[in-house]
Image: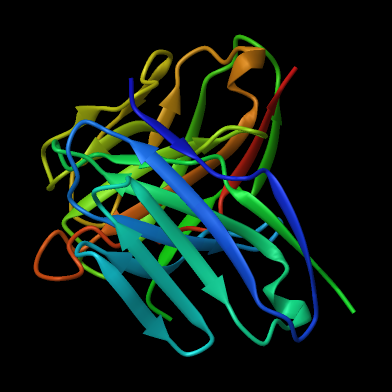
Length: 109
Length: 115
């Protein structure tokens, strides 16, 4: 079966750096997405990786290794507003999105 | 403001009742989707539509139906609601073309409780 694994919850300190990991086993691969979801709100798009390597976008970066079935989202200079759930999703060979359960990130002052 | 509008925001429903969740987008996106989100689980696709006039079944379609009469509207109907359909429902859309083909824009969600 297809599977996306992410840690359920992580805690970090304001101003610090945190890395949220995502591993996947899917039938085929056509890209990996990260979305941010604040409590009670809709998910919003953060990043998309289809080739190996690091994509940087301001304070957020996303890394992909297709051979290892692995990605991470790196958040730098953490702010309180970064407290949210972070969802990893993989586009499989049928162009269907497979979603992880999300990682709830708690930022402490 | 361009985006997706869902209604109702929240609803409590008696089991056995029929319910339609409405979804309208003004971005002229080709593809639209209905997901449900339950605690501890990833988003699960209920139904999708790649273009007006066509629909398809997702991962958890049983008990739900959809229609896509035009580009903008994609209603989700629960013919006879059951308590296991208590969930938060998100409508989403994507352009379906170019680099942003599979980037989803989500509505604010509809929280449904079936008693």
